[in-house]
Amino acid sequence: MKQMTGWLKLILIALVCVLLIIGGYLAYVVIQYDRIPDNIALACENQQAGSLLHGEEYTAATYNIGFGAYGPSYSFFMDTGTMLDGTDVVGKYGKAESKESVLHNTDGAIGLLRTLDPDFALVQEVDTDATRSYHIDQMERIVQAMPDYGYTFALNFHSAWLHYPLHDPHGKTEAGLLTLGRYRMEDCVRRSYPVDEAFPTRFFDLDRCFSVQRIPVDNGKELVLINSHMSAYDKGGLIRTRQFDMLNSIASEEYRNGNYVIIGGDFNHALGSDVAEAFPTEQRFPEWVFILTNDDLTPGLRIVDADNAMEVATCRTADIPYEKGVNFMTVIDGFIVSENVTAQAVNIETEFAFSDHQPVLMRFRLK
Image (cartoon, rainbow, N blue to C red):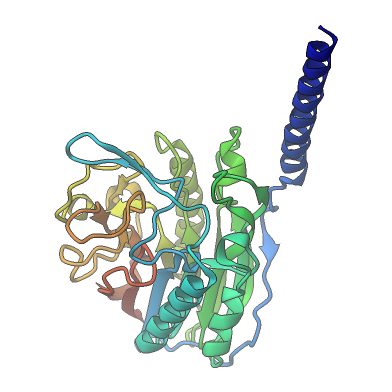
């Protein structure tokens, strides 16, 4: 009996220790959580000279590089889906498969951007110091490879150590939106989107934001260039509705003031009802995909439909590795412009070689 009592005490002590560790960790995560304030001024590093000329043609590219993790074999633990036969699927990894894969994918994405050679590049999911990308500073690699661009960086993910999933912890993350330009970018600012503050979503989702860059134009106006990355893990789309209300309000005000507006990035909405289900797939339509049309935008703004939008998708599901014709694909990356901007876009086919997204290149003129 005494021996049994001793074992019970040891088990009780061990249980108390485990509970203290779990409680301490949860307290650490909660204490570390901190929303980045709205309206933070952004420095433009390596500032370039020169203003834009109205009537001249320029180019802009947008590309979500997926923190260098999403090669074709990659799936992400937060992504879930259902196959046509009813089989539920869920992604595997919490961080990239290896440091080598991050370097390969990051440098591959950089090579694509250099080949596109845009006047402006809007890049999302760029890690500066993160467990998930083996602490490779992707921003530094990009700006070093593109030395003739000024750039701003807006932090949108700064998490505590997330020990989830247990088999492959996501870890600690510092990441954001990188905007590069060959022309002078002034009065740059980070704007905070509304986000889901529910527990535990707020600890795993990004601190969503968009960055605003102002580029002077020779006629006294400004090009207001916005780099945006909207919420994805938003059941019912309520948060994304609030985010679009904010973006619509700011963009329409700039347009009414006579400025030119270009919004580029990852909208996490299918950009039009036609492209929503345009591609062959063996998966059901995902719950996270909502459809955005011009009717959802305030007057004076419009979606730039890529010339090849029905042939080339910009995003694939990451609940399973990539296999053409199997993964659900759609177009969620691209551009929205004001009516005083003429624009033509094309989605760039990469077979999702370096990310679960593909870049979009837009040619535009300021009227």
